[in-house]
Length: 219
Image (cartoon, rainbow, N blue to C red; front, side, top):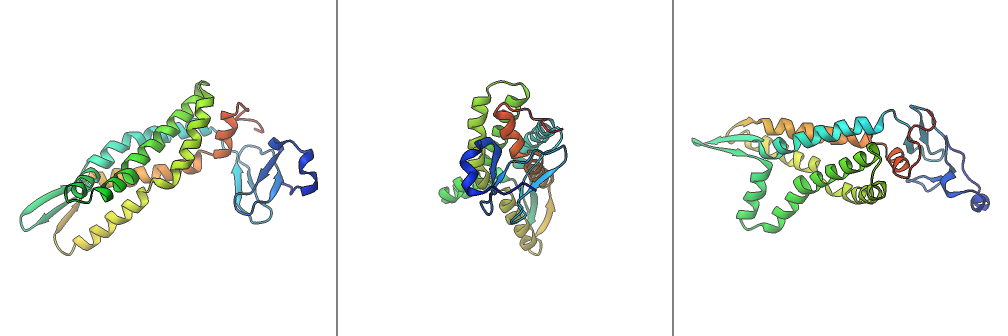
């Protein structure tokens, strides 16, 4: 665990040697981690950061996989509903259009942004940041894009949309013949990949690489 810093001695230490806990604001000396190690706050136990292996390569693979799943997840049928001889196939995009065409334009815009627009923008930001590190070009722009990504993190709500889909499936299953489509599988896979990406793409190591530091320091 990192060592807490005496407030009286903070001014004597360079800023790059200090780290603050995001949960309890305890100021500590920045630890030097070996491969696979994690740093935790000695006061509240919050994980400050971890030193993971091949962060950029693994994250790139996950981002590309998520981008490949994006189109089928949003445009392939999530479910097929058969009611009184009439069949309809619903996708994420058709849901947005349905809200818009029924006069709920404001809700349609919010659903589009949170379920399609912002998740895609987040993936493109992650891709740009990782490529700037991988190819060692435009890291100053990479810093700006990564800051933008952190502001977007709370606005991509795929899990909320998925919960809405599951609730609809449960409620409609007693009223009509319902079959699940390939789009739902792609949507769930996209959500799981994005969750895994949040774990693999260590923010500390990404900031470190964008700042020009050795990503493998401490190995």
